[in-house]
Image (cartoon, rainbow, N blue to C red; front, top):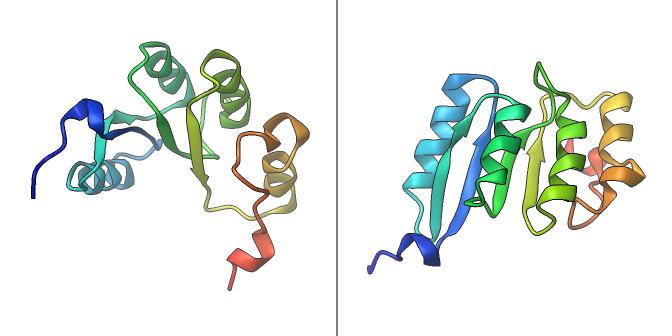
Length: 121
């Protein structure tokens, strides 16, 4: 199989506050054809700094991290880099997290409104 050049690949930034899952995701992405992992950062401020450098097309990140609120960071990301897409996850499914993820300020961040109840299986 011919390896795509970095410019032909989807450039993904991993944003997870814990090194073990972050490194695992980074390793998995680096082994995937068609994806170039641009790195792993551990907080939302570092995510915004990396986004400003312009190398990222997709953010794969945790919605619950210490430091700058990830929801506020996603709203800022939408202002500074509206073409960057976000794939977000969380270990929390409480009502407050669900309401924030589906808030009007972030609704355009997701390709479609996420159905939390259906995801629980």
